[in-house]
Length: 404
Ligand SMILES: [Zn+2]
Image 1 (tube, rainbow, N blue to C red):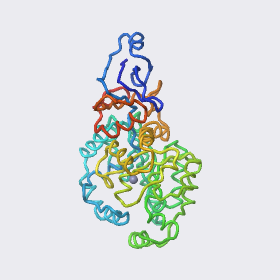
Image 2: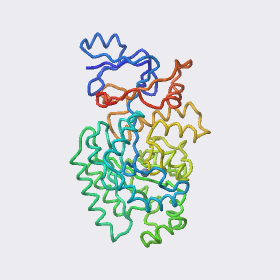
Image 3: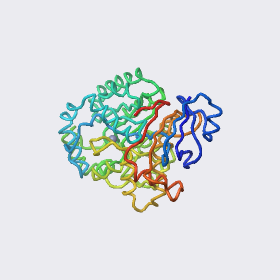
């Protein structure tokens, strides 16, 4: 048994003082330090210096590690131009990818306090590394395929990858399913894959209304995607409607990603069906997609997306970007909302006993140090100054084990 004490502990949206946490693999008790010392006489005491905050480990539910080799190679600023550059340089980037690079990027996330991440995997390049990481990985096997002639082969490949990850399942590797997007996955594939998700009780995620071009294509069959699909798969009509795509997910709570071009009504449909939305502000900005209307989302999560559309995998930087992008939102309330997005909200969407400092939850912690004593100790002020002033975690625990 160990007991950890910091100046503040983030419990249920509040920064609580004069408490400590007793834990082994899971959290056993939260009480004043003296009380815990009395109750657990042989426990190791870990006391962090002043101005530290104990958070549940942060959760980044959307990253593409397979594109970790990208640095200044892809064309940013316009979604379709970016997509064309991904297709052009994909092979080159994939060839540069190796296990060391994947480990390095997972560590970059860890240093920003991320103890759990969702890896979107298109060809299972990162399974071996993810299996052996200390971090928890939601391993999203991705299905893509709009051309009916190729659907069977793609579905077969998907099922093999999924099976491989199911065989690797552990406390820290959770197999899951990603449906690429409404413009790229045939409705029959969506139906079949969601059937598997239901049968095997797997978490699902999907890109959704990321760009204006996507909306135009799905609604009218026009815009940048028309040219793209003519060249790419010799098709001239979208395979899904926005409504049809969303309806396929009824009764299957899903982590939708982006939703930048979703209307208020569509976002409310997500809320009503128990879905959540992963907001990726830096990716959205860099691909010229715009600003998601996060004010209409009930369960907002926050993701870095991959290095194919970002310059770092730090969740702290992502939070700072969100603070700046949503300039009309109340600053301090947004700061607190962002902390909730990377902890409790994400854990709820992933249905895991993480993201909260509460008895019975996994002892996954991220410790941050504020530069000075805060003059105002209101909750939202502590959240704000964590986001503004912390670039790196002091330490990280996963399942009660010190990881950094
Ligand atoms: Zn993505």
